[in-house]
Image (cartoon, rainbow, N blue to C red):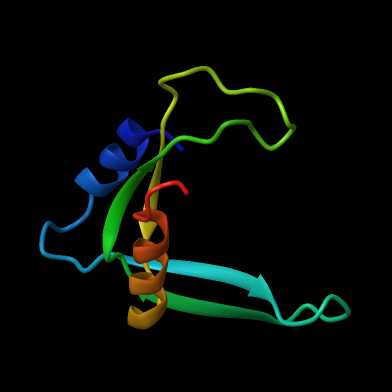
Length: 87
């Protein structure tokens, strides 16, 4: 999804509606059961990968926007980890 597509979707929603991130995952491979974990969006993080899912190098300047959410301690640990300078 591109940023402009997300903006278009959100423009159709009530401006005072809460935004959450819903992560859908199977409970077990052998059943049709799913679980839904709901999290507030705690932040937005621009991210640049060195390569795409197929292992191809990504051109400089191509940015992905991550909506960051989760359990507070996990989010804080994640943000602390990515803010560490390279060793």
